[in-house]
Length: 114
Image 1: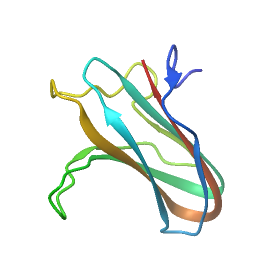
Image 2 (image 1 turned 120 degrees about the vertical axis):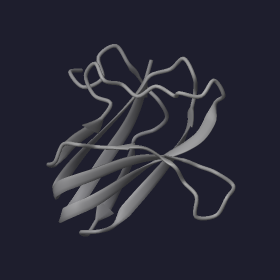
Image 3 (image 1 turned 135 degrees about the vertical axis):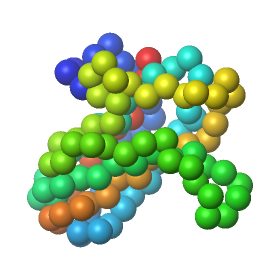
């Protein structure tokens, strides 16, 4: 509630078992007029990394939307009053990447929007 106030879940919660360095991805539509927050919680993973990227048809070209600035087992992007808004007037395919930067265990991530 404190990281995504007034927001609704966007898609399903993604969850996986991680070793240090492993990643997991989820896809979503980055839609103008909406505001997005991504939250992840690790159990056993002591430093979770988050990144959002645009998905393009050009191999090797995935412009970043942003990365999380906080460290720890519970992290967010666009949390509190800083939700992420598309700059383009056109909806775009995007993905979020969850990474175990340190530790091993389970990570669950959920995208929220309003």
